[in-house]
Length: 118
Image (cartoon, rainbow, N blue to C red; front, side, top):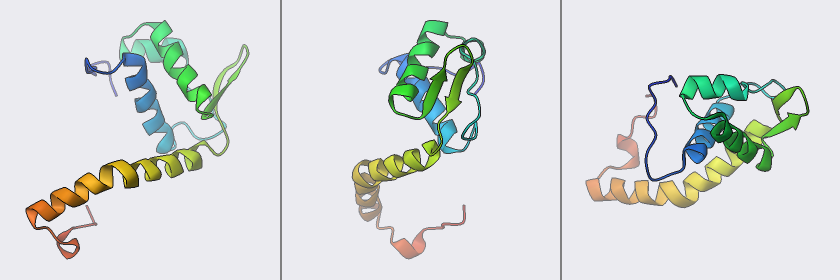
């Protein structure tokens, strides 16, 4: 995402950045074992305070997705993508899917009408 990103006003920016970085990790960017972008790079990219970036990265550390290597930076933990995929699937099935299924029923859309090749 570029510097033109706008932040919503209902969620703290550090949480929004942590969610964005989590999405990137889920996509394999950066790969496991590789360094995360530095606080300075992320602050410049998103035009936010480095302390805000640090707080977002600490959330990823707390979630066991990245590790802080003193004096070297933050690195993606081995197995981070698989853990993220499991937790995101669980969240989707418990929170998003029931609402989506209800909306499909409301609109009269059946499984055979869905195009999975998008």
